[in-house]
Image 1 (cartoon, rainbow, N blue to C red):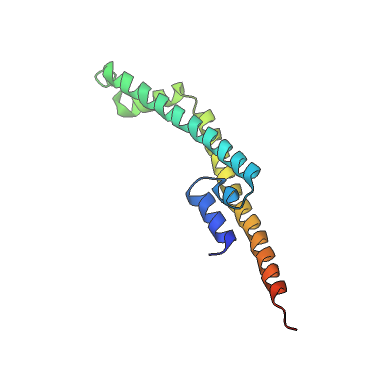
Image 2: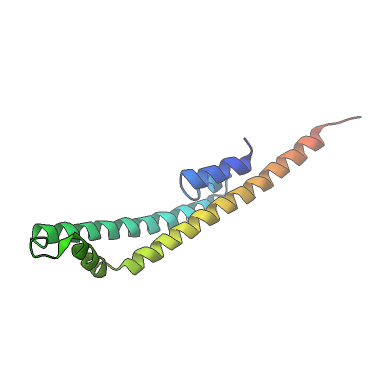
Length: 125
């Protein structure tokens, strides 16, 4: 398997930055991974806060007061800052896509370098 494809798949399926790390581009790999992990942490924290609010409202009898489940969900979304979660999601998506493209680009450069080295190692004299 070519380095470009392997690196792109690792960044796409394992963790953004994994492809760069395999290609020994440690700084960019760690930066991609770090930003994506921070963004995912923000998303998970907001989801946990959102679900905790819903459970608390259900336990406090909000369903019995005629609000219904849809009312509880919409009120909870207002209480949790979904703008931050949306921003974190867009950052993660952008980093994920950039990581895949960069891993493929760097892998392609490595592949071309290896092909040139193989071609120059053949001595037809």
